[in-house]
Length: 349
Image (cartoon, helix red, strand yellow):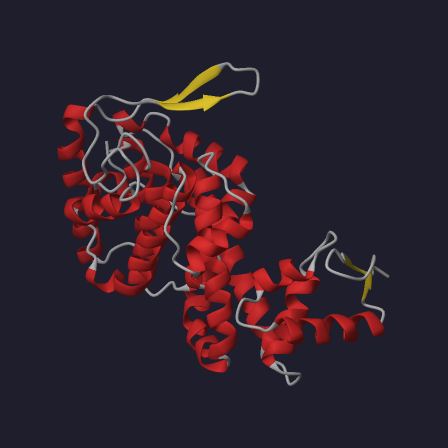
């Protein structure tokens, strides 16, 4: 019941295309240091946007929703949560902040996993930081009210030992240095989700742990481009590949390739988006102007000035207005009306 057993790993084979993908991701990791030096202010803005998007998307994947503006307040202003949804998002915010600040000092151990879950659940009535006491199932809910069992996880009484074994296997394989970290990290996440060690919050925890483990191997793109948002954008594939790779997991006969391919593709998309954004904002026109232009050019539907402020929280409204006016005068965008309710739209030629 582990994707990280030596005998299981030794039987894995990879196509030329998969090896090429891993090589590309390694190259992106090597280039990211250059991006970090080019425009610190713009990168700070990207990081704020990514935190908002990560808190929003990871929770929305679990059916926890709030107006975008309220999520901004919770994440950027560190406001105290009131409703249950606000409590869930504030907990995710705190756990995410801890990973951003202290990932180097957070080994992948049962204690760290429990502590991180406790932080994520710190504002809700049901205490976190303890493994499930009753058996659970991964359920797919259909619009017509019917349900389907996607997967039956590890039994509750076996969970502590299963998590202990998972973290030991991960530590051993990392120390052996026989396999790329980008193979071991998604396999550890798959096993975590198959164990499903908590009564609530397993999906959100898996995404927090994904960031933590990637950061520990210097894959830092999740700081600036929300991986959780990419997972949400492709949620059908996200859930389908997890389910496909969990079939026969209990008997060690599962096929991890669907999940690995999806995971690497999502990471590759994040790095390409990061390179595109940083490449735009470091041109000679000035990072602030190009950051606003980039935010506008990503909008395929009508948008308000507030939408652009959300994407560029470190840039003043006056600066955003200047860019909007200039792009309007150049025929790149149009405005529906004046005043507070003005909606802008790109002009597609």
